Amino acid sequence: MKIEQIYTGCLAQGAYYIESNGEAAVIDPLREVQPYLDKAENDGAKIKYVLETHFHADFVSGHLDLAKKSGATIVYGPTAKPGFEAHIAEDGEILELGNLKIKVIHTPGHTMESTCFLVSDKTGKELGLFTGDTLFIGDVGRPDLAQKVVAELTQEKLASHLYDSLHNKIMPLSDDLIVYPAHGAGSACGKNMSKETTDTLGNQKKTNYALQSMSREEFIEKVLDGLMPPPAYFPENVLMNIQGYESIDNVLEKGLQALSPEEFETAANETDALVLDTRDAQSFAKGFIPNSINIGIDGSFAPWVGAMIPDIKQKILIVADEGREEEVVTRLARVGYDYAIGFLKGGFESWKNSGKEVDRIESISVDEFAKRMENDADLKVLDVRKKSEYFSEHIIGSENTPLDYINEYLAEIQKDETYHVHCAGGYRSMIFISILKARGYENLIDVQGGFTAIKESEKFNISDYVCPTTML
Image (tube, rainbow, N blue to C red):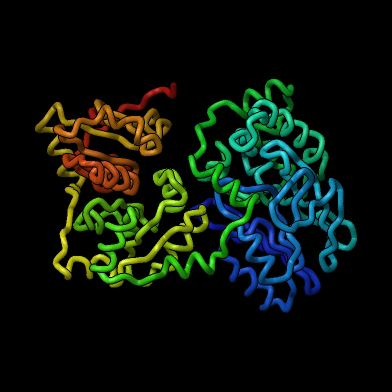
C-alpha cells in the first residue's frame, strides 16, 4: 500500500497517488498526466479511479486526459454535474481499491460538490482523509468562489454549509487520522494556510482557528474576514474543469512551434499575440523585445500569469531560456492558458543577433538606491507588494501600488515622473515595470533584490527608512 503526495510549489497544490494490490487512484491530478501513468507502470498497477474533490478554480485538472489514457473512472461527489462521463458518487458510498476502501464524504461549503475521501485499510483502520479545499492545514477553503459561477450561492450561504460539513462530517472523525489537503501556503484558495502540507486531524482540532468551538454566525464572520478578491482567471478554470478542455498534447503541439526571429516578429504583428518573456528579471532588464512583458518561470509563474493576463484565450508568443520552452507551455496550460502559438527559437540571443530592436530597463543596486534617496528627499518610490506586506514594514514616503491591482493605480502614476520600484525580492517589480513600459511608461527604475535587500543593506538606516505600521 502506498500513499504519495505530489506537491507542486508554484501552485501550492497537492495531488495524491494511492496504490494497493495492483490498483491505483489519483486525486486532483495536474494537467500533465504522464508522471501519474509512469508511477502506475512502475508499480505494476492499473489506475482505477481519478478522484476529484471538487471543480477546481486555481488550476485545470488533468482528469480528462488521465482517464482517457488509463481507462480510469472519474469520480465526483454528490451534486456535481460535469459535461463529460463521470461517476457521481453518493454520500457515504464505498469505493474499493485493492485492499483499501475509500469512503465518499460530501462536504459542501468551498463549493457545493466539494467532497472528501476517507481511506481505510482492510481491517477498517482509517488511514487518511483527503480533504481537497474543504480543510487545509491551519485554514479552510474560502467560500466565495462558487458564487462567481452560480450567483445565488452567496458566500454567506456557502460558509454556512462549510460550518455544517466541518462540524458534522469531519470533526467527529478520529484524532490520529492524517489530513491530506489540496493546497498549502501561497494558494489563493485560502487565507491562512500553513507551510506544512499534512497534519493529524487531532492537531488541527487544537490549532486550526476554523475548528474551534463557536456559533455558526461567529464561524461565518471569521471565515469571511480578510478575504481578498480571487484572481480573475478562477471562474474560467472552473468552467474548463466542468465543461472539458483540449488535450494537453494538442496544446503542447501548438505552443512548441519554433519560430525564427522573422517568423516571431510576423506572428506578433499579425495575430495580436502577447509576447511573454519568462527569463529571470535581471536578464530581462538587460535586454528584451519591445512591448513584451516579463513573468519569470522561476517564481509563482502560473498564478501571476492568471492575475496579469485577463483573457484566458489570449494568444501568447514565448521567449524562454533554451530548453525550457515545454515547461513554459505546460505551466501556462495548468491554469488554462492554452493559446500559446510558438516560441522564439534560440531564445532572446537569436533576436538580438538578428539586429532587431531591443529595449532595456534600468535596474540599480540597493546601495545605489540608498545613495539616490540620500541625495533626493523627494525621490518617488513605488512599493508593489501586497497591502499586508506594506503595512507590516515599508520605506517612509513610499506609495503602495500592489501588483495584483495594477490597473487601479495607473491614473496615479504620471508618465513624466521618475519612479523607483521595488517588491520583496525583485520578481514582482519587474512584472510591474514591464507591463507599464509596454503601455508607454518610460521612467520606471527597478531596485534589485527588493525590500529584502534593502533591509539587509548597510547603506540603509532602518530607523530612518523603514516604518512598521499597524494593519488597517
